[in-house]
Length: 377
Image 1 (cartoon, rainbow, N blue to C red):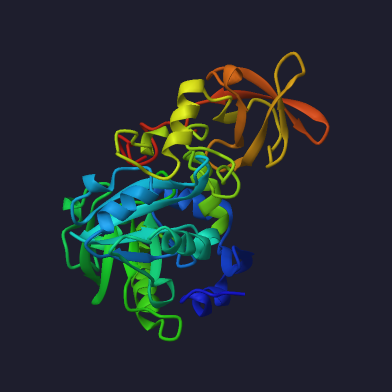
Image 2: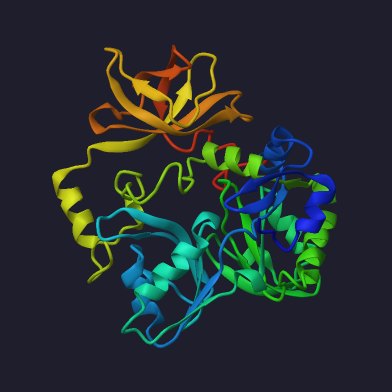
């Protein structure tokens, strides 16, 4: 079983679980408390189980533009984008964030499940390109500080003015005197930062522990909570964000997953382009949708979805009880002609048909919650 640089910190206070081969915190105080802390104020996550791959060299941009669907050439130094990597059939190898550090040097962050697979995929397709690919996951740590008070929390211990860092922009800085790279990104729907602690190996995790403790100390004023994977899952689901292995995989295309915004067909070539163009021309047969339960019941992965005639039209890929909305919510793939928002469907929850409505993502009111919120409630 793998461990992150912060394992010794977590194991003292957290309920631990296994995920993607790592021993990780499931929760500290409780999933609901941690979830609501992030929605209403601030929380901090250890996300060092995710991958960190450096891609550098004269052909770094050209190579990345071939292996990902989004347009990496649009990135200026200290900026990031969300994208997917596809196989030749248009299926999603992984979804990831790519940041441009300097002109010919990039950071790619794969999902924990796909760390080895993605690294091998990149190496396999790098033939003919002047690039160096380096997995630095075990030599660096990664934290996520999320919530409307994330900036105020980090600013207390940060050497740079974070108010100048816009969404999907980055900055090199010191946090509590430690060299870090900050990216205004996250996986909760909220404003916040992902923090890369460069010099923090599994053997010498001191810098990661120092930054973690400094963030918790700085956030005390705001009621910061250390958060586990339980809250990470409920938060990303409320925000309508996909989990690899559940909602997207190599048999799912970005067009079906409603991630078409990261597919830039105007690029000369990228892996999966022809298959995705064909699917776009022919029309997609199924589509990812949000389901909000209208009756009592918690939808779970694998539960079937039916229309009012009793016909099976799809299946749930992720489901939970929303701590914010106080009802069951889910993601499902349903037949495209049945995917209209406002449609009423039935979810089979252990033999009982329970009514649900197809709703837009995110599930919450964006005026009140998330990075687009108008005011802090």
